[in-house]
Image 1 (cartoon, rainbow, N blue to C red):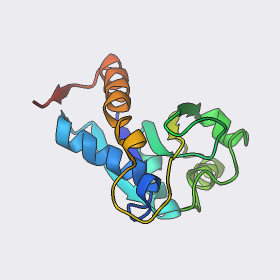
Image 2: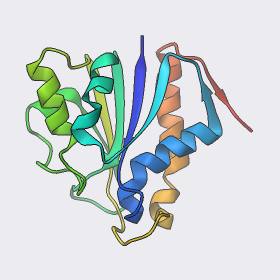
Image 3: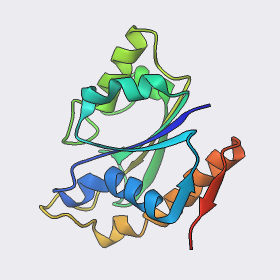
Length: 160
């Protein structure tokens, strides 16, 4: 089973780049076998449709516009994407994941399992660093995703 962990976002707008920072965090702290692909999706949107379609399981990490406090993390599943239960635009770098998944679904190529971990940003100010609020969320979210992958049978090594 091939699993894709896809981090989306714009690194030049602080918290908007959370998904990309998440991928970098995983690369620094864990080693994955070839059955797990880490991908810095940046702001590519529709250009990466093929990556989503080639995976059996996809974890997306991005910022979301949702009710709550900065740093709150929400989990959404594929049905919520395709049934329009999420905001039309999750973040400023759209065309977004919803549109990509909808196109894949029309072509009959959507992975069976797609989960979005969306976090509410504290700042969209220009800058390449995360706000302290979101930076503090990286380790916990990483542990949650890694634990789920391990429960599914993926071998992952935590680095010192």
